[in-house]
Amino acid sequence: MKRIIDHFLCLWKEDSSRKPLLLRGARQVGKTYSVRNLGASYKDFAEINLELQSDAQRVFEKDLDPVRICRELSIIVRKPIIPGKTLLFLDEIQVAPRAITALRYFYEIMPDLHVIAAGSLLDFAIEEVGLPVGRIQSLYLYPLSFIEYATACGANLMVDEIIHHEIKEEISQVIHSRLLGMLGEYLALGGMPYVVQQWISKKNPLDVTKTHHALLNSYRQDFGKYARRLQVKYVELIFNHIPMQLGRKFKYSFIEGDYRKRELAPALNLLVTAGVAHKVYYSAGQGIPLGAQIDPQDYKVLFLDTGLSQALLDLDIAQWFLHPESEFINKGSLVEAFVGQELLAYSNPYSKNNCYYWHKDTAGQAEIDYLITADATIVPVEVKSGHGRTLKSLNIFLDSHQKSNYGIRFSTQNYSIHQNIHSYPLYAIGKVMSDQKKDLKEAIEKLV
Figure (cartoon, rainbow, N blue to C red):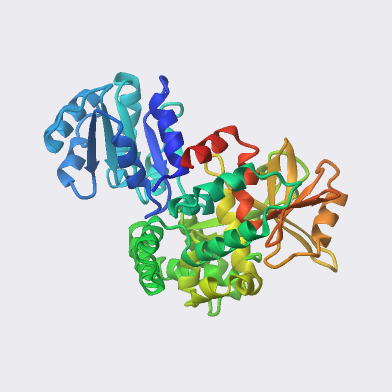
């Protein structure tokens, strides 16, 4: 499957000042597949899984001379590793933290060698050894976005229409209905690459459900790798509970049992580091950057993927295929989580990005689901799972934030502009984000 990240990997390959690259993201989001896809464009591709090949780990236990390391690794993979011709891929690099440190010397001593490293729990190893400033760069990968899902399904013309459609004109009702139906499929499946691939080949919801639970178990099996023995039960508890609080401020007091925040908060942070969860911080929204005005104790939590969220809740995904219109209305918190997942998928891949929201403590409890930066200003985003005719919170935010010129509503409605409210269908999040980012638009156009 083609991915947006492919474009940025190609840019890295062609950059004469490239640095060793860390491809970062949660388990099973497609990191290895994307690197192998890039490797096919090289004369030689040398892949070493440091978890499977323990003898390769020992190569990094001596000095960190990249010339010696390449010579010994070439013996292990039985092919030469040649600067300028070979892409060296170190997978599961987190099991050998000294290998992360070694990357700086590849940059300093062998700058012509193309090196990419990845790992499911990479960020924990980085916390241990750190990253040398200016010597290594990162790219972040998330589950497939809706745009990527649609292109994987062969709906390239529909994607092209989404990306280039102007908000002032309604899209054809026939196309609109088809896109909402496809979006319903996506919300049922989620964006985990293996799930999408399985659906495209078999179209069997029962197989999808089994795969969702298999993926969830693989995440559970990781708990003992990054949590202390006494923490594992708290990590499991938070893991299972996140989907229950989608769409609202996360409160540990909602978790049944005699638990204290000081026990549960570190467990949530471990899941965030593992990429399984993402915090959506409250921001005052009065200036850029949004992260400068957050309350670190006030946040919502997103789970990695909508499909996995529903599997954790044991929800029946069949209704998304049969009656997507009613599911959009009935599963408002999941639709809101989908928008957050999309915003992350289309965010700047060169840095780890956060999502933000806003609320005002008034009798009406005005709340803005997300805040984004567009046109050098802060734009409030409200998600309406149904037709979304009430826009009280958007108007309250715009009245109290004079620098914000307009707000965005994502809903099942067609495109429109009314006064300072820009309305987009839920499937057009990629359109909104790519209009602000030239490189993202180029990446999406390459998909189609």
